Structures are given as structure tokens and as C-alpha cells.
Image: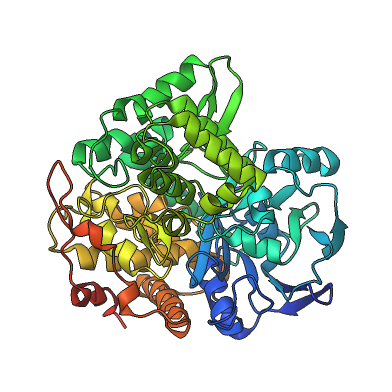
Length: 574
């Protein structure tokens, strides 16, 4: 395995042996370790001192089920802290099979030219780029796939990235030629600061990923795959309805943020629900189930077509549908699908952008429920107009521009699709994760709402600090392994599934790790990230929700009632 350094100041590439301190790391553990060691915490996120890191997970490139995830790390232009953004698609597995532990992009060119990177068995080439500038992700992926072959991996930024917007994401081609996104934290703007439009990955004749004990590894694969297929969430609910199965569930629980987090239920929920979406997809001859990367046994993705049966979008996720739906009071699934398509094409985070639109509605720019007006705002982002740049720089920026105080963010990152007053465990995660408000950092919804891994009340404080802590630790380890977050559903309920992951890691690397070692890895990741943020100027005051969450939210009239001292208990594992 090698680490490749791409120096954009000198336009050079250097292959390095993996230092001993990083040999046992992958995915998020590795991106955060590199950023923490090599990036000055106080630096400008779009300046010469920031670095952009791509790292496959520890299990990525093997036959381990659902192990095709890649971590992207840097100092975030949105939060000002350390960031890891996670993505599926084909690139991660290809990088791993090429023997690449990480790619570190550092320095800045003089800014007069753009470049692309091509990665193959011979290393990485830096090439001047002009043809794809200004183009959307769909066109870039289609053009490069025709030019270099359908199996070529593509990592790219759209127009939002080229504008340097702090909500810009990094997009990755999936096995079907569609788009997956490293969505949160504005890392597309960091890639643009390095003047890189796209990266292509060709793993032809790659050496592959060595496995020390193939038979033991195969046994772990069988146990893990079987556990995922038999769990009711990963084996039934997600494959049929996708993540959008949560609309009706959260609406019933009173935790579906509606009208910029004023209510916990949306009267139009049934029109945008997973069940309604499934029926619509089947009627229009779309695909209700498919994968975002090879080796996935959950298949929670889908292809959504318009009324004429034409492709609109893929990977139509709950958080996106909630964002352009309930929080903006829009109940037309076709309009929401168009919004998802635009965001994928221009390369911008759907969560951040949807909440920014809701904040703009709060400020009177549009009426709540104005779907066509919302699409118009997204087109303004695509054009790079002054208004588009305001919305494209996120919810906090939009709130300042329109004088709005009701801005649902933590560390300047938009709060996703679960009201923290009605799902208190996720509120603890929002407040305390080093990532800024991020549901994937410690997904307490599993236990609070779905009753996976136990039953802790979403409306009471008791047990939710501990729940968030445990899930944040576990998630950091899962991200480091390169596993999809959804495997946690099975791992929480089935000790054999967790042990299978330990067994696969041991078999691959010839180790003798225990479950405690895996938890220790997760803790070390969080400590590293938190220390970086402290050095960047973050304090306990940043581990808070906005004060408007002290308001009651119907239907339960729940409030956010955790003290600063209680929230800091999340970190008592140190």
C-alpha cells in the first residue's frame, strides 16, 4: 500500500510508504489523522495550508459486504473544523485495489489553470483541464465514461464547487453511471481551491487487496452477509422502500421537522412518503431497488422517473426528500426529485441547500410551499448569481443575509431531518459531534425510533447522552472500515454481525483484534477530531443547539432541555 502526495504548487506526485502510525488506519480514521497532523487548525480552508485527503476504508476493495465507502477529509469551509465526508460509488474500491492507502492533495497552483488527475496502476498523472470546466456532473461523468470506458471511476465537482461555495460537495460515479455525493462540509470548494475539476480512476490490471487468511475471511463474509439479509431493516425495509421509508415513521413519531422546524408533523407527508414513492417508481417503470457500490447486499437506492418514464434522479434519499419537502412545506414528489437532480448535477449538498431555502422562506424571499420558486433558487445557484451564491453558501450564511434568527445549524452546518426535541438522542449527536450537525455521526434514530439495539425514549433525556456517545464511537469505527452506515442496524441487534467485522479485519490483515480494539479505534478518531477543533478555536459553547429549540414543538410539545454540562458528558470516555 502507498500514500500518494499530489502537490499542486509544484505540480508533482510522490508515492510514499505508509508510516507505521497510519498502517492500522483507513477511511475516516486515516483522513482525520492526516488532517490533524498536517493541516494547521487555524488555516483558511481554501488556502494553501489546507489539504484534501481521499482514503478507502480498511475493508474496501475486498469481498466484505457493503464495504465500498470512501472518506474524504479536510478542514471544512462550512464549519471551520475538521471534516470527514463519506461516499459510495466505484472510486473507493478501485483505489483500494490499486494499492492506494490515501491520496493527499496539498498546496495551491497559481490559479490560472485547472487540472485533472488520472489514477491507474502506474500511479497518478496531473493533466491540464479545460474541456469540462463549467459543466455539470452528469455531463462530466457521461463524457469521461465514453472517453475512458464505462468502468472508469470518476470523482468530480460541479458548478457549485467551481464557484467555491461552502455547501459544494464532491460527486462520485456509481456503478450505473449516476451520482453519489460526499455531501457535507463544502469539500467540493476545497477541491476547487486546488484547481482540480475531476479525478479518474482506472483499476485495470490492479494488484488487488491481499488477504492474509482467505478462508477465515470468507467465513466472516458469509456470516456478515447473512446477518444483513435477515435483519428486518437491512433485509426488508430499506431494500423495498429505501431510506424514505422514514417519512411516515418520523411523521408519526412527531419528529419530522416541518416549516423550518416549527412542527414535528407535515400534513403532506403521505404524498412524499417511501410507500408512495415506491408505488410511483413501479408505475413509471423505474427501479425501486439498486446498489450504490459493488458488493452491497442492502440495495436501498432507487431510480426515480418522471411521468413520461424518463430518468430524473437516483439515490433519492429520505434527508433530501424531507429537506425539499417537509421543512419547506412542499408535498410534490416530482418537484422534489427535480431539486435532487439539480443538486446532484451542480454538485451541492441537498441537506444544507434545502435548509438554506427554508431559512430564505423564513426571511420572506419565498412563501413556504412554493415548489417552483424553490427550483428557481437552485437555478440561481447553478448560474452563480449573487442570490445563488448566498443560498449556496449554506443556511447560516443565508440567515445572515436575510436577517433571520431561526437558523437550524450547529457549527454552521444545517441540522438534518430529525427534530432534536422529539428525537433527543440525535440532538445530542448534532450538538456534540466534531462534524457539525450530522445525523450520520451517531444515528440514535435507530434506537430512539426504530427500537434497534434497545429502546431509549426519544422524548426523555435519560439514556440519550450515553446512546449518542456509544453510537458516535461505533460510527467512527464503521467509517474507518469503509462500511456503509446501515450495517449498524444489524450490528446493534446481532453480536455475531459485529464479531464478523472483527473477524474479517483480522483475517485480512493477519491480526488478533478484539471488539474492544474496534471501539478503541472509534474513540481515538473522535479524540483526534475534537482536539483539532479545539486548536481551531472551538469551545464548549459550540456544542449547543440554537436557542429556538427551547420552544415547544407539536405534537408532543417537547423542548430541548440538555444543559451544557450534560452534553459534555458525551466525551467522558477520554
